[in-house]
Length: 284
Image 1 (cartoon, rainbow, N blue to C red):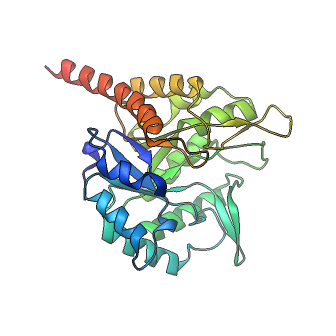
Image 2: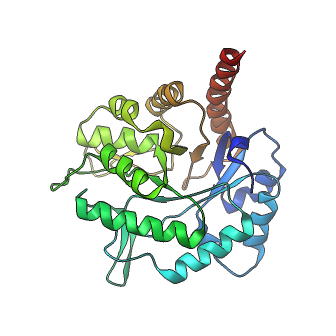
C-alpha cells in the first residue's frame, strides 16, 4: 500500500485521462476514483487502474454505500469493494455522510438527514460494519446543503466529531461543500473550517460549483468548473491551521484537458509545499 505521506495533491481520474495520468511524473501526485466504476472481474478499465496504481497512490471515493440509510450497507457491495481494495491497495477509502438507498430502491443522489442521536447510532454502526468488512479505516465526507432541515440534535461539526470518536473513522473535509453550504444556509464558512476537528482529517477535497440555473441565488455542487477563488482562500486558511493533508482536485463533468487539471493540482501542491517547508524550518 502506498503510504499517505507520499500523497500531496491529487486529481480525480477519468477514463479519457488514463494515458496522461500514467505518464505524469509530478512529485506526490495521486489519483482518486469512484470504486463503483471498477468493481468488476477484469477488463481494460481495471487493468488501467492497476497500471496507474503501480505508478501513483490511489484513493477510492465511494458514492453508493448509503451509510445514513436505515439499513446496513449491502453485503455484496461491500464484498466487491473489498475485492477491489485488496487488488489495488488504495492509500485512502472514503464515503459520504448521506443516504441514497431506501427500501430496496436506489436514488442517484446524496441525500440529507436530521442529525439525531438515533441517526448517529445508526450511521456509526454502518461505518463500523464497513470498516470491519474492508479491514481498513475509512474517511467520511461532510455533505453539501441546499436547504435547512429541522430536527437536529447535533451541529454538523459535533456530529462528525462524535462519529469519528465512536468508530475510529477519519474525516474527508470538502472545502467546496463548506463554501456552498455556508452560502446556501447563511453561516460563515471560515468559522466552520476553523472549528473542524483537525486531527481526524485524512483528506481534503477541492472542486468547482455553479449558480442555480433556475434563477435562484443557490450554489450547486456541480464539479464541472474550475475551483473558485473563494474556495482557494478557504483552502489556504485551512492548511495554515491544520498542516499538510492529501488534497484532491475533484472534476466530474465538463472535463478539460489533463493539463488544466494538473495546473489546479500544482496550485494546491504549492500551498502544501509552503506549509511543509515551514514545518521543516521550525524543526531545525
